[in-house]
Image 1: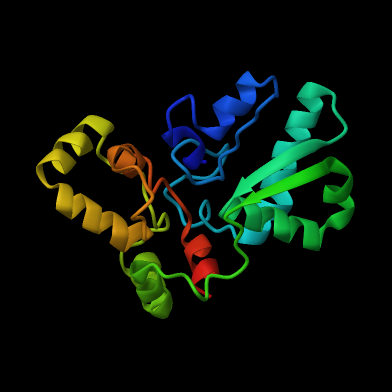
Image 2 (image 1 turned 180 degrees about the vertical axis):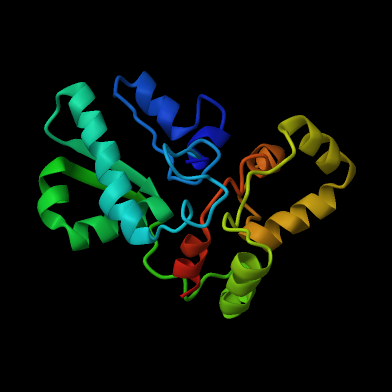
Amino acid sequence: MFEYVMNTPDKNPAMVTSRAGYDVWMGNNRGTRFSVGHKTLDTSSKAFWNYYQEDLALQDLPALIDFILAKTGLENISYVGHSMGTNQLFLGGALNPSYFTPKINVAVMLGPVGSTANVPIKSIRLAAKNWKKLEFLATHVLHKYNWNGPMPLGDEALDTFCSLTSTLCSDAAKFLWHHHGVDNADLLSRAAAHVPSGAGWRTFVYWAQ
């Protein structure tokens, strides 16, 4: 969801839409820093992170939609997805159309993704080619099941670091996210404080495949 909170209040879509009078709800996938918790499972265990894209599409997304409908009394909602958020609705709609069709009146897909075969980000392509080795290292050697843990540095620390090494920050952004040219460099530290923000190892395997 970070694309919706990175920009200033006069520009980010969630706040602009809310000020226009719409009821805006924002969800977080399980495993992000805003959604790490379980009633019975230890969040550091492999079992907690053993979920796949289908689980997000067929369990988590319907749970979010049903919660919103129950709170608002509406029969359906408008859906705005970005990147993996579009993929989850694509999956959900394809695998369970009888649920999603009557509950989504319109879907706005920003940066829609169905395949990552042509992703230009060098770090992702390199990792994808070696996903089996990385999976073994993470799950069998390091016993690390959350592949992208929350960034340890806050905005202020990153602001200081990037002010001293602006070129390094810019190069890192290009390598990690392929972000350059049209992006606001002033928002780099804010984005870096939230990205990556938590994802299970099976999510990475899904995109690598």
